[in-house]
Length: 297
Image 1 (cartoon, rainbow, N blue to C red):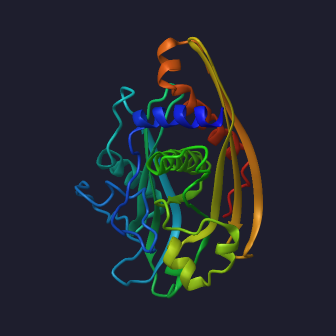
Image 2 (tube, rainbow, N blue to C red):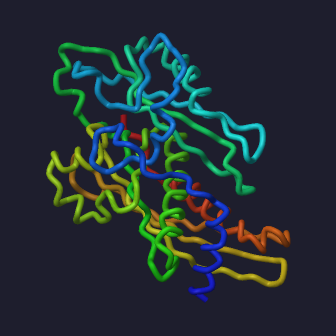
């Protein structure tokens, strides 16, 4: 049964496409972020600097707030571009009178029918402040890093398919947390610590190298499937998602939670392609974030 589930999920991953891949190290941190692709090229001309970097040519700055916008595409296969959303982000930041928007990053979120129509962009509005020396590297309680999801080899045997599954789950969780007011950062497989003990063993310098200067929390996720049933054209799926939040300030786990995502369809094509797996993953990410702790200010 477990081998059957792994095979079925592997098939659906062929249709997901690779939602995130390695990007240049635009943002500080040795672990390559997967959410900055498209954030460093061909941005529109604006009267405000907007960049994926976390530095302002060495100038001291102070973060005055987070900005976030999202937009839905006109079809399941059509998403707004980063370029089209950046002017809206700048407009939203206008009331804060920033000198720049740093840490620009982006993501998508699949709809329940398996599409990815929503595109979002997020960043930090900052002002140059000569009295804020060193504050560039002050971490924030509302910045959460999301390393790769831990998925057992026995569940998805192919390493590339596991990476794709992890990337989609990271994007799903990031979307929901950004909606709650957090600033998130997702990372490529194998480049960030995988467990709490590894995080506890890191000093501040190592932590910044791995997650950049702003990260105050790390969300560690693991996935397990409970059930998968196919009867003719009908299919039902269940997915368990577990998460723990490690707090940089206290160096302790401050929250843990689990959620279950389920789906059921009678559509023959959906049953054949296994799109119910994706729905169950979406529902699991949505359910887990509903239990998430309140955003730190």
